[in-house]
Length: 424
Image (tube, rainbow, N blue to C red; front, top):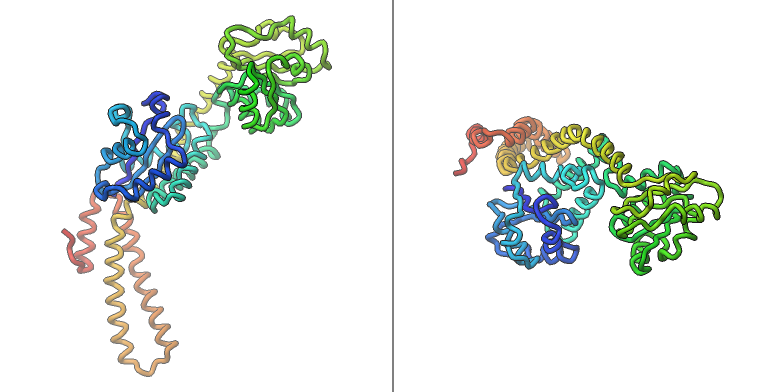
């Protein structure tokens, strides 16, 4: 029995290709039906699909070599010609597949090192596989181990402690400036991806009063609805800034949209308190001269990049500690996985011992006709406990030997010692 991982990710395939192969919950349900009704020759007994914006990975259990079967699965379920995605695929088996999933769950294989979202996505993939009955004991154990490893990586190291994206760093700096984001008036200029990531990061840090301003109200309203914010257009900017504590700007405009003269006029209409402005747009939205106005603190991409570089270097310094955790967690799973090969033999040994126990017990009881039922039950329990104790060490040793190069020779020796039938 082997574990396979076949997939593409942000390092091997463009976003346009990943978009064609991505799965949603409905697709995954269809995929499980395909698996249940598929060709028995594929011999895929378990399947989990991990699908995010940055990766699409199929984890499968099979007793044969299955990359071709998994490629056909992608063609049939997602309708994408194999020649389009085949050059971008990677394939791992057994130990490599296990190590890869643990690295994914811990954030070591993410576009942003240590990002937290992937751990929840791995857990979601496990839950969907359970709901669609495409998972079995092996992948269930593997994904649980990966989730446990990912949690350990985040609690026992600093791999996810410092912000590692511009948007999360902007939110972190806003929090450091104001301290209590739940009381802060926050204005977001723009409604694109960077702006949304900033809103998400702010909401997770406790921000409540978030206003999204955009050139078109429709996009602002869509973003605001997703994150329980309010929305308006750029025409409301001056009024919004008259009460704002924090401004984060990411409009995508080709030129600056906020200038020192305008900002001075706005500040004259508000109480004397700081205004923190964080410009994450390229080209810049905010004229650098705004940062020279008393009471204004301005961060732009250059200053943010310097902080981000420091954050990433701190995360990268944690990678060896994370890998040490993953190595131990992988070993625990692989001990279990390899022990599965010995389970049939262990069952044979126990059955052989049980036959002997029952035979000898029957002989003994025939020579002791005066025993009560309670006394017979005590003797029965004693013989069962004796056999269990005698076999505990040998069976534990058999499980341990399953993960060694001499496992087959060891199994043959066990068969000889216990007088079991040799399996060709």
